[in-house]
Image: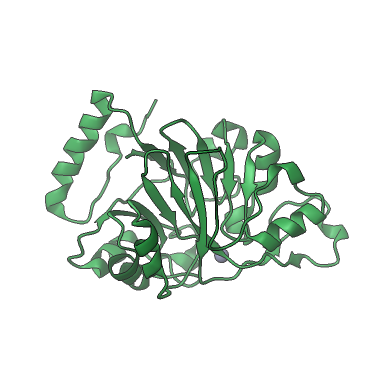
Length: 287
Ligand SMILES: [Zn+2]
């Protein structure tokens, strides 16, 4: 079921924690302990979360043309069931497979308000397939249980219709349309396990409120630099503002222009108590 379970935790922040982490990983794999969540990183910002009750959430679908996505996941059919797609902003490296994946899976879609409105107006999305929301609000897409909060990000969000694969893009006088403002998401699972996905962002002071309001157990944080925080900014954001228990660095190494590394992130974190989980694309972690 988890072909990569044997090397799930490839690195943690402190050497002394490696053995503890390895023991814990082996114990959870063989003991059959019910997992509160599974997190699979599919390269870049693309992340699949499976809740304890089996709901599947895919964040920022960029698979078919993502050089870091394992080949077996570059076919959308390989993803299987998806209940909900979250898009942090309109840039193609976060939304390229949104339209075909929504159509294929019938998943509901949450994205920045203006991005959704424009895609609906173009007839590119089914109006019954979306949750309309904006920053500061939350929805419960499956009734009681999971809460999805839309939170700020410090970034932009134009939609490139060509990157999105929108078949009628040539008929549109504008290739780039308004995508509202970039966002992040805080996902509270049924059992209270709370995950923050930063999307693309620079550091901003109100990240401290993400800690105050939600106390995330796990944060997926962009570290690649150039278009987002680099390792130094991300380390400050994680250690001083967001303060999750564990962090997974994402959005690095996909393209030469975002070539910063988890090693630099770990170095920048210094003696922070936040545990770093460095994943390989396609890898699954249980929490
Ligand atoms: Zn972006």
